[in-house]
Amino acid sequence: MPELSRSQLLIYAAIAVAVLLIGVRWIRSSGGATAATGSVSFAADSSHEGESTRDVVVHVAGDVRRPGVYRLPAGSRVTDAVRRAGGFAGGASQDAINLAARLSDGQQVVVPGRGTTTATPGEGGQTGPVSLGSATVAQLDEIEGIGPVTAQKIIEFRDQHGGLSSINQLDEVDGIGPSTMETLRAALQP
Image (cartoon, rainbow, N blue to C red; front, side, top):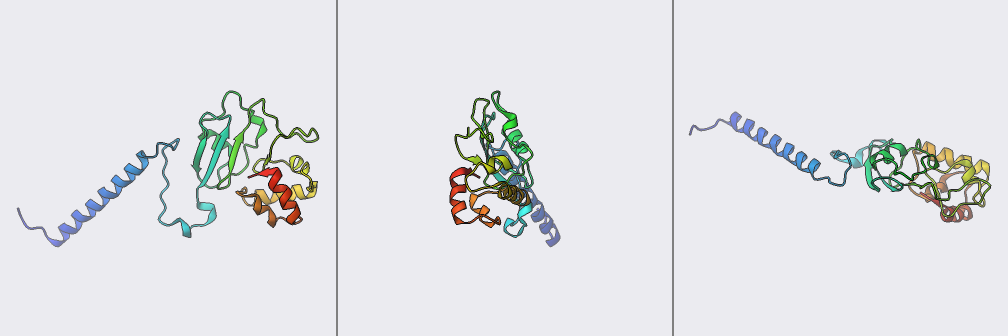
């Protein structure tokens, strides 16, 4: 067998590294059984990236075909999360949530069924916390201590920040003090 030159060794080493990287990428992409589409995002170091370029992880629950936790690109909307969860199930109340709302990391998207009681302004028919990700001004106005002006400020704050992952973020909204925060924690969910 002839002896290899230094340049030949470097070429063979580069080919070996390339094959190794392709193999690792293939193994990672085929190993994601829980991902609906099998897409994998690779980033060298996401701690240096801006908030707007990171993926969001959301929990899709309720009347969808495949409820679960999904990773979506930053800037995704509720409609993208529902689609990723297989779409609406047969009994879903599609108009009960805001499909155009922007998703935030850690958010839970609950798709109610047709028979589920939802908060309707003036009826007092709410049986649980209002979803902060899809709440309307009228729904927020129904909460004790929140008037229409503060409700509008909350909606604007949510829209400016691409959604909210925690009720505690509302502490930054002008007009919300400590006592109002306690009321909001009981009446809202992220």
